[in-house]
Amino acid sequence: MTKNSKKKGSKIELFSRESLISHDIPFLPNVFVADICEADQAIYDAKIAVMCDGCHWHDCPTHAKHKPWQIARSILDGKQTKALEAAGWTVLRLWEHDINADHDIVGRAVEAILRERGILELVKPDRTLSGIFKQEVDK
Image (cartoon, rainbow, N blue to C red; front, side, top):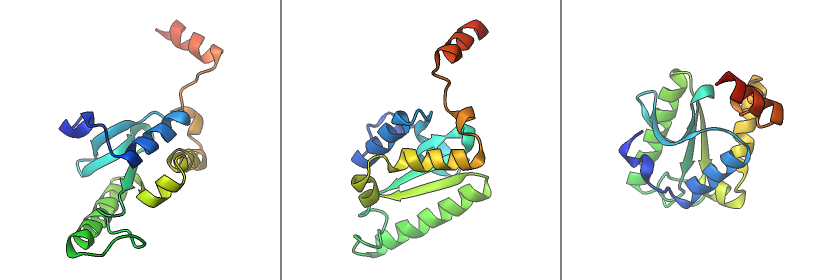
């Protein structure tokens, strides 16, 4: 874990985490992935990096003032996304205003990616009684 992994996170990062938890998707918060950058959440088993981009900080086309530093941040975001994708990761970038409008957007989006890949059930823990019993027997 990075030194920042103990921070509480922004409001949208917390909404994102809650959404992943409600969908039973295991993740690590605020972790460095593929030696490239820090993801707000990473689903390592599926190589999915979730980035919750604040409208002010990441040059949102709808809400930012498009100042030079915001544009530079947006360019860096694009480079990081391309590098992660080249390393085999799927990058899910969501704007602050989208997360605020729909607190469950992250969980649904990640679940859709997992379902599309046919690995949803492999990533999600088996919380059925038989699955819990099997885990106890396997210990």
